[in-house]
Image 1 (tube, rainbow, N blue to C red):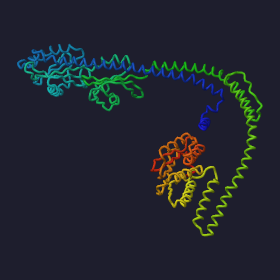
Image 2 (cartoon, one colour):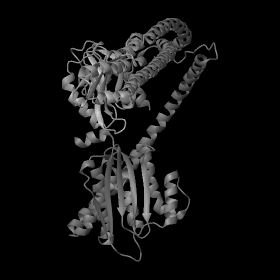
Image 3 (tube, one colour):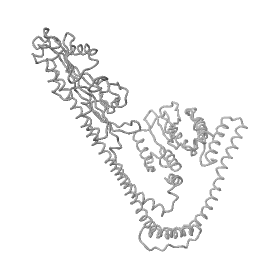
Image 4 (cartoon, helix red, strand yellow):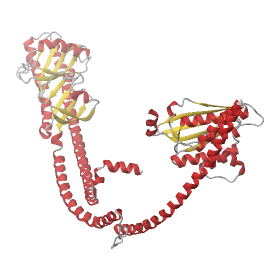
Amino acid sequence: MRTLYARWKDYVLLANMSMEKKLIVVFIFLIILPITLTGYISYQNYSTSIKKNTSLYGSQLADNITKRLDDYIGDMEQISQIPLYLTSFQQLLEDNVKTLTQKQVEMESYIRIMNNIKRGTNSIYIFDNHNNKYYNIITGGIRTDLDERADEWRRLAHDAQGRSVFLSTQQLANWQSGKFAFTVLRDIRDFYTQESIGTIAVDANISVIQNVVSDLEHASGGKVLIVDAESNVIYDTEQKRITEKIDDDPLVQLAAGTSGDFIRKIDGVNYLCIYSQSLKTGWKTIIRIPLALIMKDAVQTQNITLLVTCIIMAFALFISILISYALTKPMKRLMRLMKRAELGDLDVSFQVQSQDEAGRLGFHFNSMLERIKELIQQVYVIEGRKKVAELAALQNQINPHFLYNTLETIRMTAEINDDEEAAEMIAALGKLFRYSINPSKGTVSMQQEFEHLQIYIQIINYRYHDKFKITFDDGYAIRQYPIVPLLLQPIVENAIVHGQSEEDDAPIHIEITHEVKGHMLTLRISDDGSGIPADKLGRLQDRLRTGLHGENESLQSSGIGLLNVDERIKLHYGPSYGLTLTSVWAEGTTVILTLPYNLQDKGERSA
C-alpha cells in the first residue's frame, strides 16, 4: 500500500502542492462538481424533455397528416363508387343509340356533380368498353397522356374485380391544374349483371397534400417527405424529388417500421426525424425538424447555468482562500519545528493553543520527540548487546566447520582404504552438511535446492537400498528462482519417514512439479506412499491454518517440519503464501507450496 501511495505521489501533480493550495483546489472542486453536475443533469433532462415533447408533437402531426390523407383518399374511393349505384349513369354509358357528342354532354353533368363532392378533386375520367373517354371540358382538367394511360388503367381496374386501385403521384407536365397528381381507379360493373361496362379514374392534385402539410412546415420550420411502399416520393417540401425512387436514401432506410423517430445529420445540420406509416395506402410520412430550432431554449438555459456557475466559482475561490489560510497556519508552524527536529534539534516544542486536529497533532509531535529521545537511549544499549551476540555466533560456527572438516578427513581415509561406498556416503553427507550451514546469501536458487534434494535422497537410499526415487518436471524456467534454503527437504523427509508402510516394502516415488499463473508459483511435492489417516490429516490441516504448534505428541514428529516450512514461507514472503496439505490413506500425500513469482524473478531468470 505504501509503495502504491509513493507511486501515486510521483505522478499526481496535486501531491507536490502545498496544503493551502490543496485545500483551495478541494474546496473549489467540492463546490464546482455538484453545481456542474446539477447544471449538466438539468440541461440534459430539459433537452431530453424538449426532444421527447417535440417527438411526441411531431408524431401527432405525422399521424394527423396520415389520417387526413387517408380520409381524403377514402373520399376519392367513395366518389369512384358512385357510378356503381346510378343505373341512369350505367344506362347512358352502355347506350349505343346516342351519338358520342350527346353522351359527352349528358356525362359531363354526372362528372360535374362528382367533381364538386370533394374539394381538390381536379378531374374525373370515365372510359366505356368502346374506347370512348368522358371528362369535364369546362374545368380544363385534361391529361395529355390520357390515351396512353387509358388501356393500362382499364386493365388495372379490371384486374381488381370491383375494388379500388390506388396510383401514387405521377408527373403531369402539360396538365393545366398542376404538375403532379395521384389517382384512384375502379372498374364500373353493371348493377344487375356485375359485368364490366367501363372504368372511372379520379385524379387529385398534389396541392391537396401541400395544403395538409403547410401548417406544419410554417409552425415548426420542418420539412415533410412522403414516400409510398416502394420508396417512390409522393411529396417533398422542395418538390424536387417527387416521383423519384429513393430506396437508397438514409432517411428512408432509417425509417423502419410503422412509426418512430431518430436524429440524422443532413448537409451539416442535425435534424430530429419523426415518421408514421399509413396502414391504408402504405404511404410513410417523414417529418424532419432542425435540432437547433428545437434546442434553442435549452441552449439559452445552458448559457444561464454556465454564468451562474462562474459566479459561484469566483465566490467559492475567495472563501476557500480564507478558510485554507486559517487551517494551514498552525500546520506551517508545526512544519518549521519538524525541520529543526530533522536537523537534530530535539529540544523544540509545539505550543498547543487549540484542541482541533492541528492542536492534537502538535501534542503528538511533542510526545514523539520525547519518545525518540527514549528510543535513542535504548538503541545504544541494544547495539552493545548485539555486538556481544555476534561474537557468540562467530564462536558457534567453529564447531560445525570442525565437524565438516572431520567428515572430509574420514572420507579421504575411506578412499585410501578403497572403501568407495563409504567414501561416497561421507562425501554426500559432507555436501549436505555444507549446504545446510553455509548458504552464500539469504536465498539460494531453485536448482541448488533440487541438487541438495538429490544428495539427500542418495544418502537415504544407501540405507533403504534404492527404495526412494525423486523426479522433477522440466524446471528450466524456474532454475534461477530465489528460494529460502532447506525449504523442500523437510517435506521430502516427511514423505520418507511417514510414507513407508511396515507391511509393504514397495518403492516410493516422490515427484516435484511446478506451475506458474500470473504472479504465483505453485510447487507440488507428491508421493505414492501410505498417506495420512483422515483424523490425523484433519488435525494437521487445522494446525497449518492456525499456525500454532499443538501439544499432542503424536503430531510432533510428523507435523513440526511442515509447520516450520509454512512459518518460514510466511515470514520471508508474507502471509498470502504458505503450505497446504492433502492426502488419501493408502494412496499418497501431496504438499502444495505457493510462492510469489514477480517481475524481478523473471528478470533474474532471463539473465
